[in-house]
Image (cartoon, rainbow, N blue to C red; front, side, top):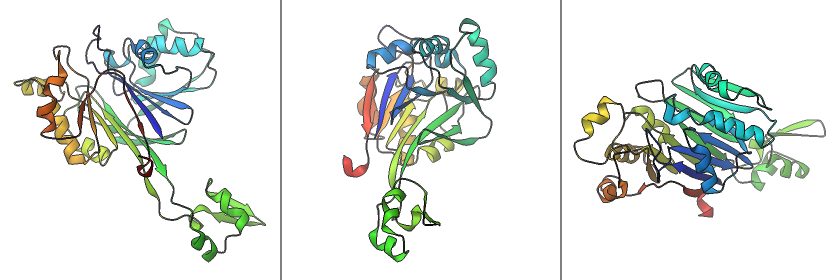
Length: 304
């Protein structure tokens, strides 16, 4: 199970009733934060989640509405008596940008580990989850992220017996890749059936539609994507500033065959995003016009 909370849904600037776009994901005692604009700490508090388990912070890009809340977040993590390393992931120049922001947060009781993204696609394993970063198309270097939880196949007694795996190995091999017994090393594939469908969440914002988004969001259980504009006549503006309309996001969701789409990163001028829901759902039916604090639990198919 993966817990998901869209902390805010705003783009460009925070509003009294709309925080800046940021996503928080919890799994097995660890938390991943994607983007940390001004006011992200308030949004975390509003949703009732904790700062201390945040082990990874990812950045889509270095515009202020996606990173300016970092110094305060680092200080809060320090005040929560964190001593474990914090992993920061983002486009190249990440360390330089973060160290500049840390002028106002120089003393921290934990080390920061930087992972700068340089390739079009990169994969990082974090605390049992697979994080896939993929480049998108904004006016600065920008990445989307997929978070995946794989799931091994079911234990197969017949397969274990066929491969002559002793019974004392059966239980350990359901939890680990290899197990040594009486001088012989046995592997997990000797006792498990075909890998089952896992869980997948894809998040992207501040971009034009790209093939990389369709590819990386393919069959996601949840696709969170910017829908900056819903009004008619905004298409040219979206192209000029390299953003996306709600309808373009819905087309991507349709092409990627995702299970559900949450729209986010609304323009400050978009006062009532929900008024466009019916029109967007004509393109992709399972579209949600998200609100701040929108949350859900992603669970394996047979648990729904």
